[in-house]
Image 1 (cartoon, each protein chain N blue to C red):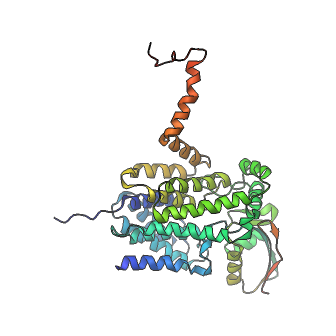
Image 2 (image 1 turned 30 degrees about the horizontal axis):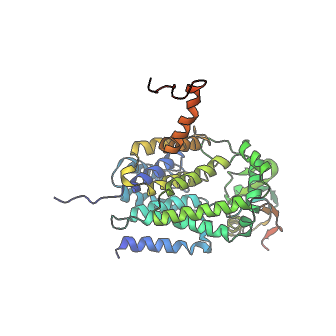
Image 3 (image 1 turned 180 degrees about the vertical axis):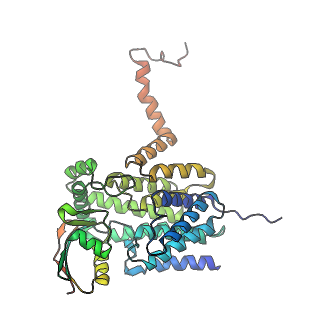
Length: 295
Length: 108
């Protein structure tokens, strides 16, 4: 009896996260040209297939091809965030059990080139980009996100713009973080998933914008650095993505979820919490007389 | 080397030569607040109308200030205008990273 080849579960989960976001942000419905309706139907079918079928590679290849052909054929539909989605799905479809690292290297490449580009740009090194961007963010308001209010007040950016006199430290920190994320993906380093998620959640929280599909695809790719045995269930990936990609989402929600996740998994954080709660039990009592003491 | 690996590596290496600026895949290479002034067929178009004409993203436009906000590279905007505008004249005024730039005109 033939044994089915092992497929990295991470790839399936990443594809499921990307497909869920593609569906719930309406990307599967907006295709240019006279073939808009058939493409929408095909795209929706491919996304639904990715959510529930085991044929991840074939379906990822199909959706990637659909996106690639449309990107090439329609300059007005072209967007870098869609290109990123296309590239990740393409690498998922080309991966094999012997060569499972193509998606990781793809993400590493994007981060590495973005970091290098910033490192070579004087405006990033000396802080002009950061200070002017935060000032413009405070002036313009929230950037686009599902369910968001483009141009709405952004008090976080407003507060930051009054505090940020020299953006060079922040600029260099962003560059360092992007290089670190690139190396994490390239060498499958521990902590990379958290760094990557923190980066994307941080951008979303500050700007109120998802940069198109960048936030959703970016966070989903964190799963490439999670060990097979620790991969979340498909239901959890889909449910969380639906929570973040629908018109009901809020820009502070990803940060709250990430914080809750970190708290749940951090022994140090739990110890701090317990120490903080102890005075509530032991105030004005001699030591050893609190709850749980041997008496 | 099987064909999947070969194709994957080809796509990865090909990205390094994409439009000569692969780094601009990710947003925030630079940010530019710009306004457009287009004269075509006896009509004058402001920024909002120009965005519509060239099918440029309008997510971060501010019609009340006659501005749009590009969060990747203004070169993309210029490339689209060069490709799309064959009869009219365009003037683009921008602040890149907060710094005023000389006006860009098409055709030159």
